[in-house]
Length: 310
Image (tube, rainbow, N blue to C red; front, side, top):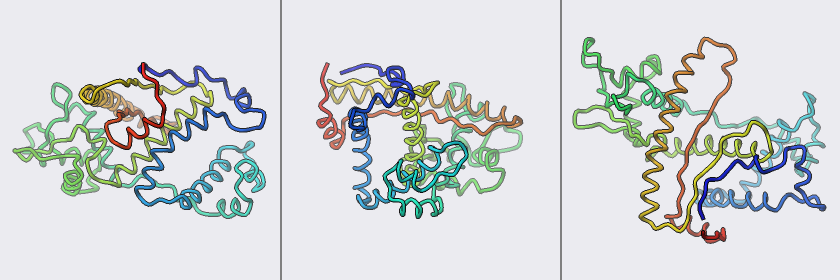
């Protein structure tokens, strides 16, 4: 099988026609249920690996059902009744009342992750920290002299953090989780795969939630027929050898990183430009993924998909 997938919203009806997608018994579309089962498999695998049990996730899911129904299925600005949320979600009224009274424990961006992401964005997006080919320069920890014109890691941290945190603290953490290394001249070198640090579970877990939330949000909007649609496409092939997959993975990493740095450079420039403007309360998240069936658990999923080969 091979191809480049198109927007789902281009082939599905608009929201006004969504009731036609259910059968006479009021059940959800079978194709949608199959798709949800598919996307839940890797999530269940992750949860089992970290001892997140079925009762635990059911309680969490119940609270999310109530939260989404309460916030996103309102009629105007009128507060919804517990009975209506019960009707929408199937969650018992007593649970609805209890869950609505509990405080929101949504995960905010940890400070170390926010600062780290900003530093990487500046390093990859500012001409003064790049070489002639657009690659991030190795940075001395401190500026050699006032007249050298050479930017240092200290300069980068001061530019982003405004002397709010010591550069050495950030560097030690980056060295620990694989975002940066020191070369033979004791210059700080950015790992060009720094968007996915080798270590640092908290960092990876945070971006796991953030990026998959935004990707699912974009795909959901497209599936529901909202316009304009989000760009959400992929290139997919099977009948490949391990060597071919490794070659394609290397190519995907190279062109993917190039796309990320290009978008990052433009986004950084526009963010600076927008600082003096009003209405700067919007955000964008542009991501790229590369998946293959090299690992055992992935191959098991592939067997269950019943793929047809071209």
